[in-house]
Image (cartoon, rainbow, N blue to C red; front, side, top):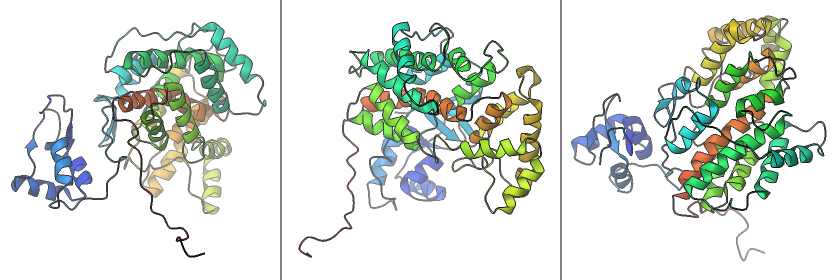
Amino acid sequence: MTHADGRNMLTTAQAAARLGVKPETVYAYVSRGLLTSTRLTGVRGSVFDVDEVESLAGRDTARRTDIGAVERIRTRITLIDDGHLYYRGRDAVALSSRAFESVAHFVWTGELLDEVHFHADSVVVQRCREATRLVSPDCRSIDRIRIAVDIASTYRPMRFDTGSTSVVREAGQLLATVAAALGGGSSELSVVESVWAAIKSDSSNPNGLAVLQAALVLMADHGLAASTLGVRVAASTRANLYSAVSAGLGCIDGPLHGSAADPVYRFLTMAIDDPIGALATQLRSGERVPGFGHVIYTDRDPRAEELLRLLRDPAHGADPVVIAAADTIIEEVSSRFDTFPNSDFALATFTLAYGLESDTPEMLFALARIVGWTAHALEEYDEAPLRFRVPGIYTGTRPGTY
């Protein structure tokens, strides 16, 4: 059945990737009657029913790629297509000017409402704050987030209800609780206001709030990243939302995922006073310039593009010296290496432009991604449980050889 909004339909590129063939071969399948092509208003090219593509992928007539449970994940949450990022079919950049809570609710439910409020229990927030005071003063914000998630879960006896209504309610409270626990402000603040109070020493200055809100929205989900896959695996065992989020936090706690902005921050710190000199030093070392290029995007990262646009607006009060240095580096690197700044570069620039702690990008990434993880957990709860039993290939010592 073809839906007017394109649900359960694959583009030509998606169908080709699933079948392991070139796009021209997909149309050859159409001419041979093996696939049915359809047109949708607003979508370039033909689209194909996902079940029909899956059926063909299982036949010997298709030169298909090896496929497993991971590749069979169907999701209606995020699409990355032609240099754009979409949440449930809406452009994420357009959504980034809306309240974070509203976008989170939309990602979870498909309902885009103007007035959405998440409420934190002040007692639980206080318990989380007390617990995080016991950790090393040098610990990272993501460690505090992890602790807050664990503490908050113990106060939610109904967390084992994985029904959609319950999960959405729990997720909203979890976001509000963790955000409030990170700072010292009132538990009645919005998520963005709580985060601003946690990362900005003078939080009474609201200049960066609009950029922060956009950053949280644009980092909310990015498809089946490693941490998101970890969340779906946990959810497939019917782990509750708090445990699923903890799985995601574990996956991003590494230099290649959640901490990817760290080298960008260090480079930009050196580049503020002399961007050309810092760039020359970086190139002389033989190391690539961090914060450029992306494994998915080919010519632009829409998240970085929007955040940098906001940072350049004087109305948002970002340090003009930092922005000028960042722009110099972007111009030089982009023109010399035909590349573009990514979201790690934008988050590191945001951090320096407002004088924030160096681990701010990782903190924002982790907190925002709770939105996407929740959405993927909701989808996975509707799937058959324990579907990620992946057969490994044994290469160890053979029995009988001792």
